[in-house]
Structure formats: C-alpha cells, structure tokens
Image (cartoon, rainbow, N blue to C red; front, side):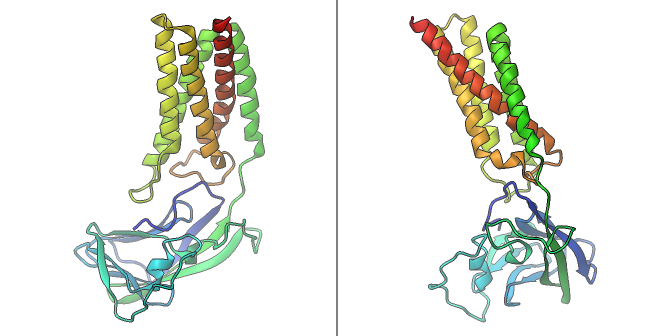
Length: 305
C-alpha cells in the first residue's frame, strides 16, 4: 500500500520486540522508514492484519494475493500520518469489501499504533528513550498472533556537523581566489557526492516506500551545470555564460540542502546505514554552493566591465 506518509528523516524509531506466538517460516514482519510503515511478507501462508477496531483490515492468501478492506475505517485513517481525515462520507460496514492491491505476498501500510500521533517532538517515559508501547493483532494460518514493539525517541546528531559547512566555505573561498579551475572541479566533485548519496537513499528503501529522490535530482542537475561550465571554458564559451552555469550549479546545491536539511541532524536518514556520509555531503554542499554563486557573480561583473 505504502500510503499515508512518506519516509523522511526522523528522530523516532519503532522496533518490533516480540511476536507471540512465533511466526512460521515464510512470514516476516518489519518496520520500514524508522517508524513510517509496518511491512509483512508472506509466502504460502494466510495472513490477516486487524485494524484499530479489531476488524479485518489487510489479508494475504496462500497464493500471495494482497487485499485491503475498503469497509474498514482503518483504511481511510491510514491515508494520513496523523489521522487528519474527513470521515463524514465514510459508511461503516461490518461486511468486508476486499480490494486487491498486490499479488506478490507483500503488504506495507502506515499504522497509527506504531508511531507518535503528533508533529510535536514526543516526551520519553524512561532513560531508554521510550515513547510508547504498541501492538498489532494479526491472524496467521488461523492462529491469533500479536506483533508487539516500542517506539523510541533517538538522540539527534551533533550540531557540530554545521561546522563542516563553515570549513567548506573557507576552503572554497581560498580555492576560488588562488585556483579558480580547482574550485570549479570541487563543485563537480561535491555534486557527484550528492548524486551517490541520493541514489543510496533511494535504492535503500523498498518499492512503495520510496519518495521523490530530491537530493539525487538536484545534485545531478548541479553536476550537469558544473560540467557544462567546465567544458564551455575549454571551448571558449563566453565568460558570462560559463559563470551563469556555475551559478546555477551552486544554486542547485543549496536547494538540495534546503530540501533535505533535516537529514543533517536527524537520528534516521531514509535508506542509509552510514548516515555520516549524508551529513558530511550536505553540510559541505552549503559552503561550496555559496562560493560557487559568489564566484560566478564576480566573474559576470568582471566580464561586463
């Protein structure tokens, strides 16, 4: 299903801590996106997930057909992370209305039981960072089963990461003054880093949980603009045109950071395990992007004299 929320950088994490009784081989439950989706994969088993009123919500048959109950209020509530849904037109019915959504034996849904229902940062109830305990009732091959877990608030990354932006700004300024060509090469290099990290974020999530790869797209745009400016210099492109391309590359880097700024300090970054690479790349992009724009502006001004 993959509806109701997108996978974003977060400080909250849901962890499945017990499944009672144990699941048979071929059935697996997991959390996707820190606390965004609950996911079940079933092979040759019958699985039913119950909704908030213990009504049938999702079911998977032995052949892998996945169906959702459109008569379940849970289906509608799960279309928004905080349950902000107008239910005035919803007609409740005790008779399930099943709709097939997949045939691969995999279901993934946004579940209000497993996350914090407020955009405000939650408080914790112990020194482990516990926010709440949760459970999801399911039926596997006719056996009532409970998926239980805990929602935790994880510590944010240090604000010292922003020091990388300051260092990159100073280093880029020095390069722009003493070795302009090297500076333009740095813009290409940091853009490529953004492409790689953005691609890892996208590929690191399962189908249905992926969102628009903003970091990948803007970094790729910056790379193409910077590369065009570099090639243009060799082909004796007018200085103001080359500078404008460089400015565009710098602007693309800054937009990428602006769109993904939450990743710098968030405890969880979508699709990544080594999150320091994203933090280092994003903060370095700030300094390089600012200097790229400033350098281009000075070159345009100089060419106009």
